[in-house]
Length: 557
Image (cartoon, rainbow, N blue to C red; front, side, top):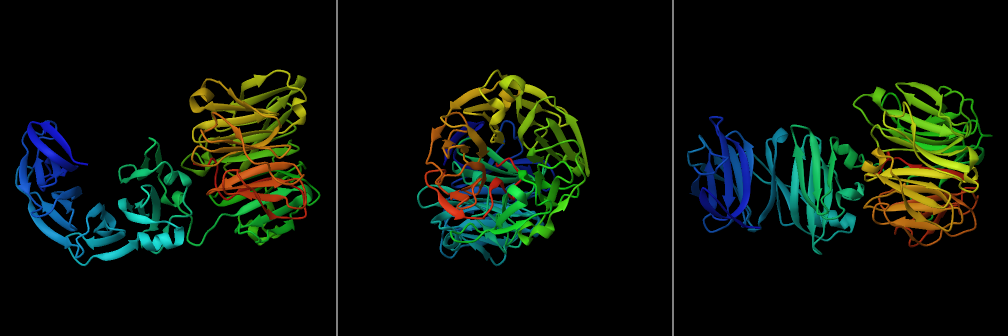
């Protein structure tokens, strides 16, 4: 949108601003207007700017720094000029490097320094050309992408590059926008296997910052989605969600395709007499991504697998974590730049905390009766949900990556507090924890001050809670009730009951899909793709199930 700006000189119809340096390394400001370029060295006051007409017969619509002394400006009729500045006060030499035969506007442009290319969008298509000019190569077509993703693209809205690949934002015909991630060689372009946060609340801008090697997508709701590893935003080529469910007598069910009617593979792991109450996904001491399960036994009670789809033989026992029985919760934090800072934390009915880091387990007594569940914010903060003596329950927190815990919140005398499952989860800056029929929430700031708010009281006691995406949480109850929060845990409403007669035990989320497992043997895996409005039976595995997880390191973003 054109703007009027008066600082030192009158400049109207501004469409873009770039800052850099001229060939002589003096700082330079370049301001694109619809009719041409203002440029000069006095960036603070903009009082020494001079004007150069660029786009005769067309309007400029964007400007981009390429390198020292070199900028690019685009036009509404599909032209790209390269501008070369010897000094900030000299007029630029303008060279036409691209003309689109169809005359479509150049809607977005970026510099792929590692490839010495300019990448730009015109209409629904993305092209690259060499810096300095050359043949434009079509790299992506929003219409082609739409054929696979069910999208109706209208134009390329924004894009950027890093040596890891490309991130694109397409504007849709209905006014919404969607993000796509391409590999560096354009071999694959993914819109379906991305974190939902990338396309939530209308993505408006994408940038890669070389100084910090950080990708950023800015959204209309004011949220900024960031990563320093583009692989965190896309599934590896050919990869899909891997779901693992575990339960009684070593029973395991796995699936990587939730298509209705697609069978879940089942098998029994070593220690087949044990019930499996804990399950999580994370990394081992070498950085290999693994599922980890915990059984009720206290001898060889932790099993890990990096390929659970391949059967029981892939699960191996880790070192004995020590004096812990009835392990009920396991979670992983990917915090830190080296493996020694990445930890697993678990707990069980003995009140023991177990902690795995740098290839070894340690354990200590928390001083409570039962630890029911464990969650982390992916940094150094953790919460465990516990029950204590005298029918009390409490949430304990750690701010040193699980090395120590202190009580954060306690509620006195809750009837039969020790007989009901407790759960805790983290997502989108909020902790949600439950005890019996109570749902408590704490923002990051409230977590710091130990302030937990009673967000909802249910008619059923809650067995599990999980964050999904787009501010949505789900809690599942003992009597198959489902509760949904669409405002990041602040308020809750009841959704459609989970069908059947068995008790729902655990819920997991990935890419718009919620999966619930029950302690029955038939119709014991259920799926919702509309946030609990409707449910369908995914499988009957023949064994009671207690936990379900997907190959995504929590918390969901």
